[in-house]
Length: 303
Image 1 (cartoon, rainbow, N blue to C red):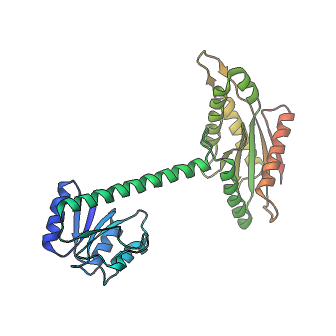
Image 2 (cartoon, one colour):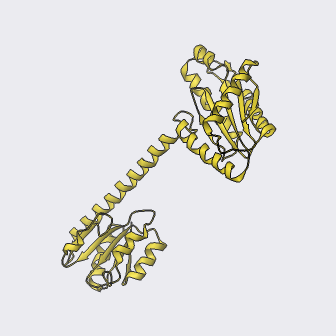
Image 3 (cartoon, rainbow, N blue to C red):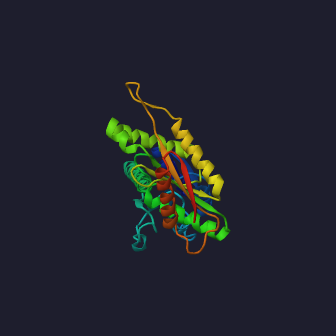
């Protein structure tokens, strides 16, 4: 771990460097707060040992500057001092994280650094867990595409951008015509595999910024900003052809054929009264019409 030492006492710096380098840490020493702040801004330093008595850290409000900078990662600060003051015990994230009394005792120094390092690792693990939870909250766990709630939020943003920019917006609803039959004949696990393949094919046939969602069990939605009419039809037909040409083969060699119907709701002009839910409803109605017309085809309505 990189450790920044703000200290002007040569003997103390030598002790800190010898003790911590022996434990595999990389030590960078500076003598003033401005240089320390510059190094924190330039590098990936997350641990600081700052000496109040031999530096300008109090006069230059070093601790406050570190917290006010709000770096993308937490910086753990150990204050090295002959005496802890009442004002040092402050609100979380405002002052030092720990205190080390002078004179420096090597075993205590190693212990404080070890504790700080563990706290940083725990914080990183919590941040990763939070990111994972947010991802789970946004994405369908089976197919990896957006879930309903995330898609509504995404599509509302796209709708508002289209409204402000006076640009078109289309939405495609895709439903697997023979999903129930696949589940009944081959089982739920094969049905899940089919959903994964369909989701992957939709993503491959769409642009990275097009929102894809698994809306219901076997229904997917695709938001197409800036796309209208025949262009939206071509995209839907490309998806249908791609899925129809995809072979899903079981262990016994049986081939599973997947058929889809697609409905498109296309808005040439996004009016002030048009809502995402209306587009979804119209796209679903068009998809149901495609099914009534025989399935494995595309139907379009204009919103």
